[in-house]
Length: 362
Image 1 (cartoon, helix red, strand yellow):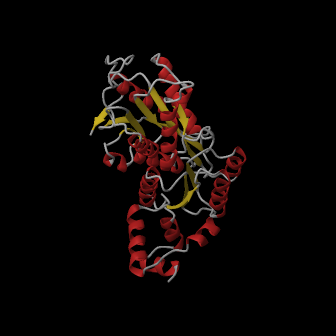
Image 2 (cartoon, one colour):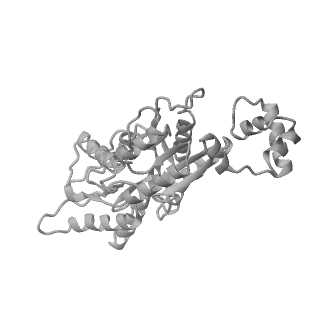
Image 3 (tube, helix red, strand yellow):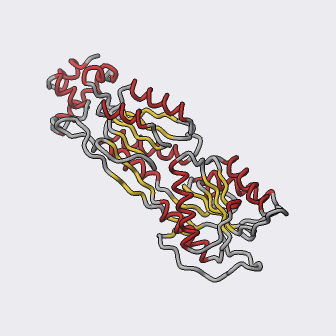
């Protein structure tokens, strides 16, 4: 079965069949529907590799994520693929595992497959690799890092607002000694979250102790180890610090690991220590107790990334146009892992200002 048979059955030219398969706006909806019916009736499956060689376009978008085992990313993958299918696009997925060398391999694979655009939902990409895509007029969209430019869009998560909402919530419960577990600090997203935490600590004139800020790895084991270090630092006879009554973490997997370490230490959540995650993965609603967390809307992120790519080409010249910036606003989801600060000496229970973001109680 070939394209000529489809054209004959639909009573159109082979060029019209090709335009329909490539999603061209030059084909009327009625004609396109007739071509699609002919394709279905004949069971025709076009050779996408041949189409890419002939047109220089593959109808294939690349999507690079950091850690496919983190439930946050499969939800982005699903939402991105859902909208891509509706637009007649295929998706090539790669996973960097937070590794710079693997990132380069992923990028090379995308170039070899002649992707029409690339969404990078992970750590930074080296500038020399960005330039390779720029020279080939392949649009890019970054999450959390990168600089907008011709063909380069940027999805910015307002961590200041999200962490500010979490800190307002803790302040309203009387917490003053608040610890923080970051992600790997070689990542821009981790540094942004830590900076937002420190700015909120300074804004509220709360005590900040270096030992109460620990680096994790965005995974459960990293959160567990970081929480153990925080608890150990408060027991040190040489330089004891105030026991934290609340913990803010860089993502939900980190929070889940920290919850394990807190329980192992014989402490209760939230009676002794409150804890807040970030991402709002589905699992966070089913921990014991259910996790209060900062929701990052995955569907919005995926849809914004796809639309940035599909809108980044000039329809007449196929050259990339100026990139867009899309800001994602987190919301706080309040569950049962946060509660009033324990009434110990030096701990204020005075309620603070209400959260300035929309709060969802579950």
